[in-house]
Image (cartoon, rainbow, N blue to C red; front, side, top):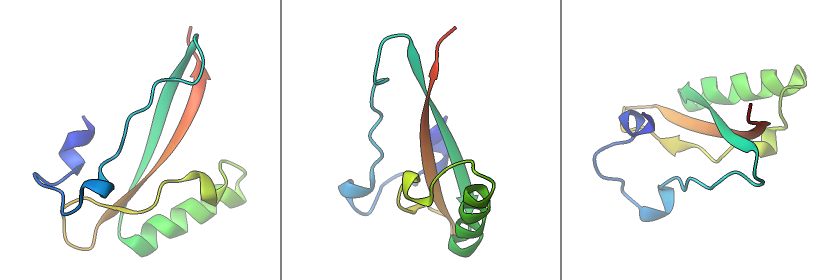
Amino acid sequence: MPQAFLPATLPDSALQVTIEPAAEPGREVIRILVIGTARGVERIIHELYRLGFAEVREWSKPQPTGRDNEVMRVLTRYVLAE
């Protein structure tokens, strides 16, 4: 239900997130969202990097959520389907 995080109309069509299919058969796409103030989101992403979870560059650019002072960033991972 990612639509709940997006405003009814986006100010720029370039900000829309494109959903891509899994890279290979037998794998599924998993997306992890971090939502909050720009500063808070950045702190969490850097903390996850220090823990070895993901490179900072792997996260999407900040996207507006439609709420004041709130952004979201997305990390896409591929896992083997069971």
